[in-house]
Amino acid sequence: MSKLALAFTFAIALVLACSAHANETYEPEPVLKAPLLVQAPLLSGPDFRVVPEVAVRGYMANFLIDTPFGPIHAASVEMLSIRIAELPAMEALDRASRSGAFATALTARAKKTGTAIVNVVTHPIDTITGLPEGVARYLSAQWDKWSGRARSLSDRSQREFENRGNPYRAPPGPMTALRDAPADGPQPPADLKNHAWYARAGDEVAREGKRYLQYNSQRRAMAKVLGVDPNSSNPVLNQELDTLAWAAVWGNFSAGTALGVVGPTAATVIGDTGNLNQYVLSKTPEQLRAINEKRLLALCSDQTAIRGFLHRGGFTDTLRTALVLELEKLAPKSGCDGLLELAAKTHGEVEARYLVNALKLIAQQPDRKAGELFTAGAAIAWRTPARKLILPLPVDYLTWNADLRAFFDQPSLRAANKAVLIGGEASMLAQRALTARGWGIQLRAPYAGAPAYARFGEFAPNQDQAAAARR
Image (cartoon, rainbow, N blue to C red; front, top):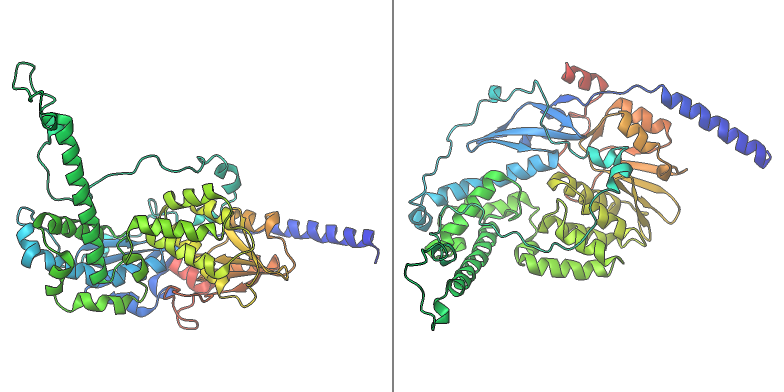
């Protein structure tokens, strides 16, 4: 067959494929039963219960956990497992706040902690408005149009200084006390410079700075004893850690030592979770930033992108370190800078974890060596030396819609040999659409630290089950 005839045949096939795609049907994101998504141990325990109805939003499952501390939200299967693993630490902190040195330091603060699990009927799933958007932005056809208008990457010129969770109010300092004094009132001695308000203000700032450093140190010490991430986004856990860390600072005692009297629960948390990065706990935020910057300079060429990643986006110090470690494992020939620019625009923990898990999915592929990393819209993809295209999608449940169609039809994802690695499940409609576009599909694609999805053949949802769940 001549080249002209071959080109004509390809053009006809492309037109027919586009015509077939134009007639595609779409589906709404479903509300599924929790056992279709998660293994049974994560659905209930002695002091928690997961609300049975789970709304999928932005390809991620949104769970509500009833606990003695009130309802706790988890915006993905991975976040559900993390929140469940944090419960023993929350119990240990609650006990500690009512005993020993902590109780003495917190006498001025009334603690109100619930003792009964909230009834699930108080959390209806009749509407899903207001739920997090999951990772829909990564797979949106509009990414290229608005990402270019994002503010340029640059170092922050100012650090936020806050005393989160501080249950105490310091009295007004000299910076405010004397500046408002009447003109005919007592004046500081002119010959004693250290009595001036600005000198005493400097002393006060220094004292507060030292207290804040002590607070950070105490907080990390408690997290290490409890086996939890000090950068967790769990609001209940954060409030307890903040409060007790400040109590230790103002009470002048060691928070880590004081936690030793709360019982064996805290000591077993590390073994139960299995995902704590002790490396992060052993470093200060400043040390982590310096180490991560040095490692990234060996992989990436754009120092502006590196600085932007280290200071912006939805990444915590823990997740930044995880991303750097995964990048080192892959050692891509190119694409590091694009990944960092994308990471600097993330919104929140779920989006940050998506990028880390995408790298982990690639790392599990036997033909990943000497490959190239590149961005496809707002997602990342991998091209092997044999020109195979690997698209990692660490999502909970993929449904087919107009945005997803536009995403998969973009020119950068055209390849003869390509595979999509889906961390969770995909509807039958989505699977058929991807297969029609030439994608090889792997569901429940394994990777290090993958969420505890429902096992194959046990609760794996099919089209009929998903439709029944929506009804």
